[in-house]
Amino acid sequence: MSDTILKPGTRPDNPCFSSGPCAKRPGWSPAALEDALTGRSHRSAPGKAKLKAVIERSKALLGIPDDYRLGIVPASDTGAVEMALWSLLGARGVDLFTWESFGAGWVSDTLKQLKLEDARVFDAPYGELPDFAQWDTKRDTVFTWNGTTSGVRVTDGSWIPDDREGLTICDATSAVFAMDLPWQKLDVVTWSWQKVMGGEAAHGMIALSPRAVERLQTYSPPWPMPKIFRLTKGSDLIEGIFRGETINTPSMIAVEDALDGLTWAEGLGGLKALMGRSEDNLAAIAGWVDQSDWAGFLAENPAQRSSTSVCLKITDPWFVSLDASVQSTVPKKIDALLDSEGASFDINGYRDAPPGLRIWAGATVETSDLEALFPWLDWAYATVKAELANAA
Image 1 (spheres, rainbow, N blue to C red):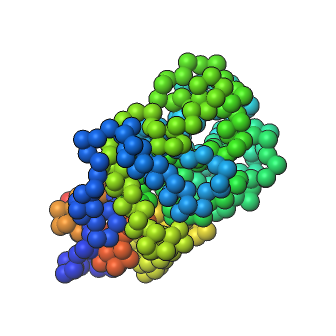
Image 2 (image 1 turned 90 degrees about the horizontal axis):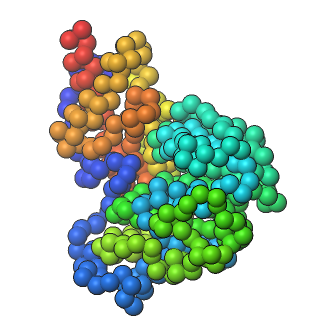
Image 3 (image 1 turned 90 degrees about the vertical axis):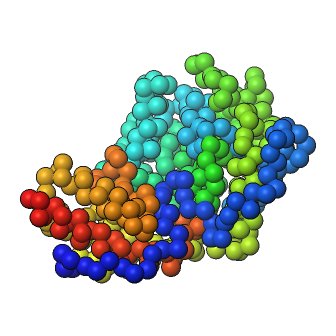
């Protein structure tokens, strides 16, 4: 690629490629929220009916087993994961797998906040997966399904036996609605509205297997339990959480937006259609990367590459030769330049990840917008490279 390249003439129709909150569904406008139950209590009959509809329609769309509980909880996916950790851990030893920042956060909370002594940590660098075979199935395990900040996903659930003794606790926030999860192998699954479906933030969802419910009913953690994390009252499950009777006050505008996203997904053809759109987007990015002389996937194993939060590294020998402090500025400059042109928003890599770009490719993103983005990426990289080379 030449150091000078003409500015592309066509921009993406929707330049929103943020990995959270994510792009709204195609055709979305504020008119989709006209039926929001504003000014009404979420505990009114119509309020609870809308919340219950989010639960029931999500469960049906995702194919969650009938005997699993699904509830809406506070504080997005973070709140849902913390609820699981605080409520369920401590009954057995726990094995924690981490390969990016969010998984590292759950490790930190388990060790430093809950202060569990019988905890083992298995980690891998950005771009790789740890060895799940190290898990002792008599112990609980905590892991992310899709590394949102590394672009690396778990390929399947074959490493999880059906006769396990411990619970599997899975943060699946950028995988649910985009990847085929083996629900029967997962005892706790969490996600947020702001990710794959492009919903508004602040609310999370938690799915519990019968085994997880049994743990809740028979085990009381030794630490004080904040109200926002409580799933039980005494030894009884708080069933209202799984009927739309939320712990705190939800935004009914966000609820309406979640319902709109579900309606869109159902109209597409359901989960398989959503997955297909994400995989098509990943294939488009892979095609561009194959032709690029400066960009590559952070995840080198194709089977492990995320189809939602696609993380790219810069492979150009010129970039590799730069001092680390200068390297870190290049993706920021690319992101800012494209933002100023209205060609893309929010594609700088995560702050804890190696310097690179992160492009959301979930189902709400049109492949045509990605195809329009690629020439802009080439232009921005060439522009930033020339600027830094001339300044040296």
